[in-house]
Amino acid sequence: MTTPCIICVAITGSVPTKADNPAVPITVTEQIESTQAAFEAGASICHAHVRNEDQTPSSDPERFARLKEGLETHCPGMIIQFSTGGRSGAGTERGGMLSLRPDMASLSVGSNNFPTRVYENPPDLITWLASEMAAHDIKPEIEAFDLSHIFQAAALHKAGQILTTPYVQFVMGVKNAMPADRRVFDFYVETFHRLFGTDAPWCAAGIGANQRVLNEWSIAAGGHARTGLEDNMRIDRTTLAPSNASLVNITAEICENHERPVATWQQAREILGLRKV
Image (cartoon, rainbow, N blue to C red; front, side, top):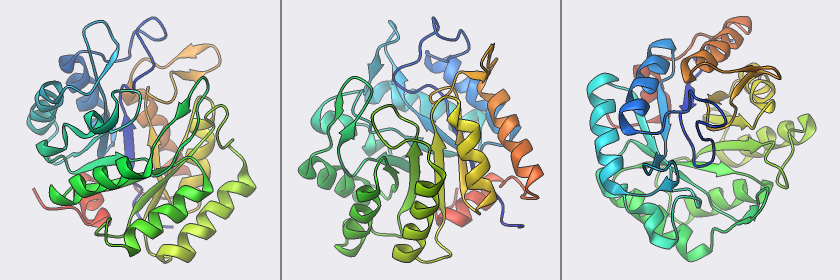
């Protein structure tokens, strides 16, 4: 298989702290430095959250603006993807940074259980976030925590609320949500292809130890991969990951094992149909 594999690095997230792993980048400066190393290791998408000084999650547009400026300077051409996830704010606050026009933004199109809470994504908020992304020429990445979310992405696309073919990411291994189950994964892939066509790109993300598992499955099946300290802070049970770049290197090795080249940022932009830089 020769289709280049896009590697997305989820650098920080909303949950991990330096108490969990000192390598988790919290400040904007740390995030830029960590992303640059991951970019040089082969990541072509940066999935970004921002944090307050006390490490709590934030949706502060000013912090996102500084991060975007730094990434554009130090990682030229890299695809910048902002998170609109629910841990960072409430209601439309979650999309307050979309006017900054990142290349992509995450879009959760349905609710589900998380380890200790309900991840609420009501229809009116989904519609508003999708409309903001369309208005600012931002490609959504659909975060599918459940089979219904893939169908909801198709419905939004059919209704014209998502303007281009959705880029769907299967998220597996979140406690109380969809486990990392191979038969379910295969059905996700089959369903995605049935709804969007066999040439449409898709991605998978695994949480914790499932990160490597999902990357193996996805890369072998022709999909794209997500890695990074947001989802997984370890190389193995006893070893903390020293950096986001170290996790990108592991993913690149999986690509090599399956004879798939790692996509350059230029190839990733072409595969995803993103605007040129």
